[in-house]
Image 1 (tube, rainbow, N blue to C red):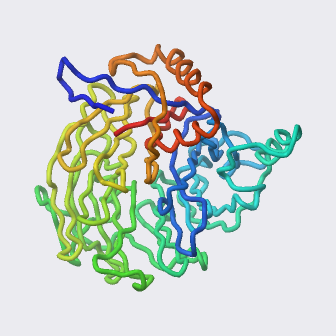
Image 2: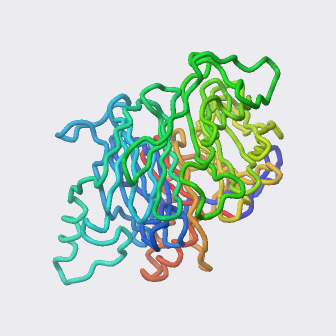
Length: 449
């Protein structure tokens, strides 16, 4: 796919989505490719090429997708408020995040719960692409989809924030989960094996806030008071540089973004005040992405700009490398930024202006603007490698095309899909490397770069 740069009159045409998934009846808050197959005891999301697309919405419903048929293969009312299944409110339900560990699905809800599901125990693998067994196969599949599995494990975090959890797999089948706690600025790290909190990170009772104009503060005195930090809005567990596969369970860093626009990095071996505090944004920091090797990152928030930063976890220092505009003319702000981790070449930003923007990771150069959704884009997910050789055939429309072309785009994509066999469609879907979900209750699949 060729991208386009802002301000160029001879801009390249951006692609239309190659497929649109419709099963949700409320805004789709999260979409991810996760690994639901077990390859040993240490399989975690993204380790294997056989990833499954999973999405969750504001009602608390989870859909596990079959990309060959482009239909929902499983539906789980994971975080729906009330026994009767009425719609969740933001204060009582809805899905915040999904992930996978050891072949099992993990979901986080606005109900303050983190749940673990074994989809293989609910009538087969989530990625089954064909119906076999005669004329009653479709009926049996519908009964399987309607089956209401019980969660294997439920962790009660009692959190009522919008901060998504971070899942980190370690050797020996150990899975750590960082999630917000009852106090909005506090993060707890859970051990999934025992279902207990092994460590908590929160503002020191009496700490001094960062000085104006000072970007980086290191050492035990870094941080701000509980009232100054605000709510934790995003978090990610980072591996300690030099740690091998058999490193201690409690050896890690925890990076967290806060309402005051700061990124704070906690050291599990030196609990207490954050080891690094970096003032990133003047507005609320809502999401950040960090690569695993050089600890470079990008953060977005409620403003028109994003920031690229560098973390030195050995020297416990950080700096802002560059501030750049996201290019939104109206409705500034972004819900999420995600990095394509298997090659670290591009990252994508989910904009409040209904757009998905693709950037070059190294040069921070804008590559493309993807237009389809009618409302704010909430979540993005890249599929893991390898990517198939076949490509999905879809209509190409100008980047400036409005959402009024939605029906034509979808009809063209569906017509192209009908001209291929099921096996060809399954191979083609391996090329879909970006999924976007929106407030318009739809999921768009894009074949980019």
